[in-house]
Length: 437
Ligand code: LRH
Ligand code: MN
Image 1 (cartoon, protein in one colour):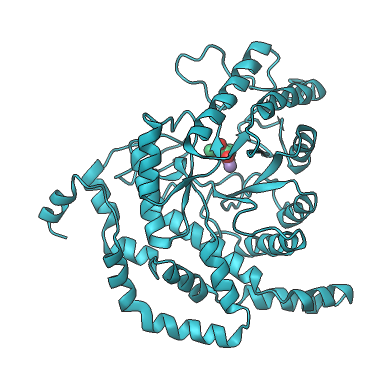
Image 2: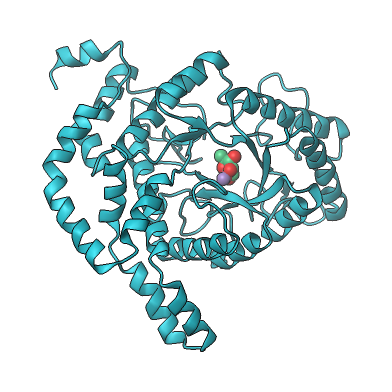
């Protein structure tokens, strides 16, 4: 693309229009159709799967549009969003490429809108909605009266607890103004050493704080209580596992649910079993999808353990159908990732793709045959049925769903062919830093 074109677009933030998508699809369509036809001939469920995939959207975290970095270093890729407007435009880019990222999840105070009216209009322009808003009592903000060094809702000092409660209620206000209908409360609260906390008092103080926040929820809202096994506390976390999150959510009331961040478990935890039981209890609220090999690595979804992701969706399809839940709307589908070596937008495109592949494979599982094998203790047969679905290359179905929704058959290829990152660097510069992690 010549410099003059760049110059012309300087004043019109990067957008991908229908003709660019059309031109890209035209080149790939015939090969794509051949693969889809073959899958449709082999799988009676294929057409139903495609329609289900069209409706299935995953919310993008506002804090994952730049380079995260670790405490050892941060290597920016350039062209990162400098403000909420540019974050929304980046999610708009993702959504125009895959028509599967139709919502953004904001983090307060990192994403407080300068003008709520303008931000809502900009989001609508990109076909985006506002998913769960996230509170932040894991950092001290400039000018903050009380420090969260020793926790927030768990704190021994009632003034600190009240400050954290007020912040969460403020986050709900921002969410309401933007049209969101849920809040995710992740507490970094906990302890680093034995003896530091009285666990019973800590639980009760935290519950009282959550109850005050719960009382401020609008009638149609949900509260997601996100648990995490460790970090930034390394002896105990006050919402440390699914059991504790379930305990809080059950004591809080019908609008409170647990939130499963895949990276928040101890090594080798059976997350698909946790998902199955929380769903059975009607207390599973949603997900923060990512992948990890060790800790809360926040890596690309499906990049380390795609079979686990498939097994989680296998339990989701089974459990949601058992409760006659709507797959697309009845749970919170969100990504929570952080990027160090990949282009943030390519990383998010890969994550959305991996989630939709796992969902499509789970929809292909022959449930009647699986149930028959389970009831017959035919363990080998059960595995064969599961892995038949897992080993089916459903990517053409995921691409066909994109095509039907007006998106690109190969989003990352088009992202690269259009030099999107170079354009964003031209617009924003090499050294821009996005607020977030
Ligand atoms: C905590 C967490 C939480 C967010 C934060 C950005 O590890 O998963 O969901 O608030 O990441
Ligand atoms: Mn998370």
